Length: 393
Image 1 (cartoon, rainbow, N blue to C red):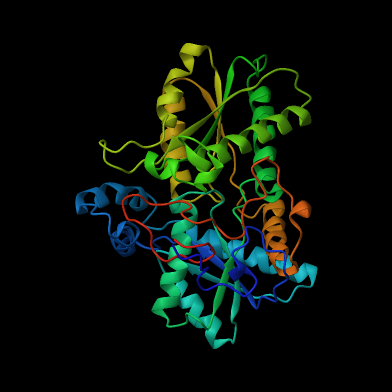
Image 2: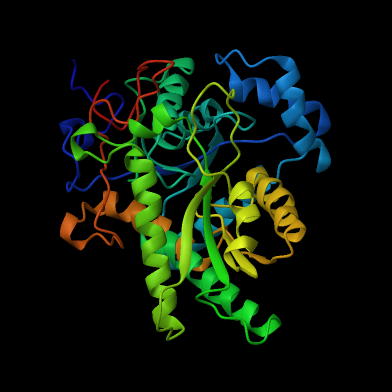
């Protein structure tokens, strides 16, 4: 097994878990998932997302109706435009001269387009921000693989180096918006439901994207021993606990708030085990437990893209209505000031070589790695492909 770190700056090429050597980056690469921006884009976009997985066209058509419900336009591209503008404004406010380039994995503008722009502008050292906070194949390693693919497609391997900020699931900038949202959600429930008992009659559901159980088990480095759900489940649970305890302090609540981690947006065949329980199944069980209200927290998501708008605002909210539950859906970080500021802080960690002890992390799991460890977040079905920002494979 090679321990090379492909396409990295000299500092990150050392392969150390945390890089504390300053790096003079030329630009920030904002890496998005991408989404269709018209009805004609929907099926080609879904083909891009599912390439190599053997998904039949009829299944793509089933998913397509989610996008067609919104005119064939995913909100994710516009959200990333807003995030890019917010990052640029924060950089300007701090007097930091770092341009922000934007490229997507699955739709225009593609990562390769951003790299071509970087080359044309003379940038050779990029620090990437992936718009995903947790560790798993689809939320981390696949981005790193796509960086390698983009460098290969543009023949820029060896000319442009790409490092990546650490997974930021427990960075205060990411967690704070959820603390604000859950606090405000509980306050709204109390206001609209006089006399409700927050401890016995309200359930807080922290929702994230379900992934195959085999991928979950291999998320994060194997030597950490996270167990069946891997780092993916462990990180979500740790952040949820921080949110709950923070909300209790802010609202001066004495008692235990009821909460659980749930999953959504499953897309695999019934024969393949995915992480459970499904949020809609859980909501259906709440009335029998004496619940009158539910707080839906999109803990796994950075913005209100399609999985939030359809699976939570549509399906989960309808499930709550059908079960006569009052429901509140908490906002995602989006362009929350703490989130935007936190992303810039993550960039500066790497630019300035901040010592690990000085890096903020709100759980005992972090601060996470700058350079992913060997074998981290393996995709069992597809095997290992070249990936940047981590030790091979």
